[in-house]
Amino acid sequence: MTYSVVEFETNEFIFKQGDPGDLMYLVQDGEVEVIQDLGGHENQVAVLERGDFFGEMAVLEDEPRTHSVRALSDTKLIKIDRTGFQSMLTRNAEIAVRMIRKLGLRLMSAEDMLVRAWAAEGRTTVEAQMRVRGSARLVLVADGTELALPDQTEVKLGRVDPINQIRPDVDLTKVDSQLTTSRRHAKILRGNEGFFIQEERATNGTFVNGQRISAERPLEIRSGDDIMFGAVRMQFLLDTPD
Image (cartoon, rainbow, N blue to C red):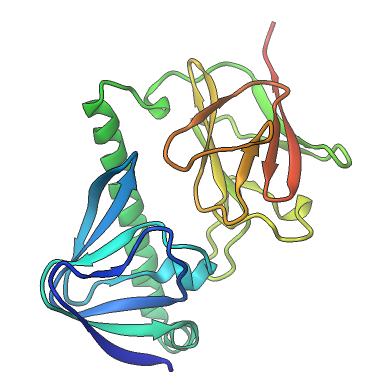
């Protein structure tokens, strides 16, 4: 199977957050809504209509669904498996460019939604705060290899994505010979109250001092903390100026 048409009734879920997935979908007719569960509350991330696509990250990453998708009306979708997706990109580079642009717009929209949600709760995001002073680094416990964290508010950690050539701020490839980290594994946030870590799409998890962290809310980290990215054990170190 490469392409096929499937139908869903109004309010029927195409898939739910956390489900395994190896298919993407193109909306042929009708509308669907993309939903993310944040702290037990459903948040509508986007409404997609004819010509829009969704579910592509499961095809690219072979990871669980990060959102739920539900039909807003009786809907017809074109279902595309991994082979069909790769064939589509190979035959038409314009489709790949369009997808990258849409993914960028979705990311900005999702981040804006999160900021608004936190503001509604009376909390400020780490990104909106002043950055703490000092240089930070991750040190591989096994052999002492050091990875410096760029001096910026948000630092994305993961591996290079060979399909769309997206590169993380800190590439974990050279310290992850077993490929246990995801391409978009986690991010470290720098605020005036310190450093925080938040999981993104980590199949094998992110652990701070032995405790798995949540993808929903950043966790504060301190100099000397032990962090596991998949099977890669590192120590977070902060060098503050005198």
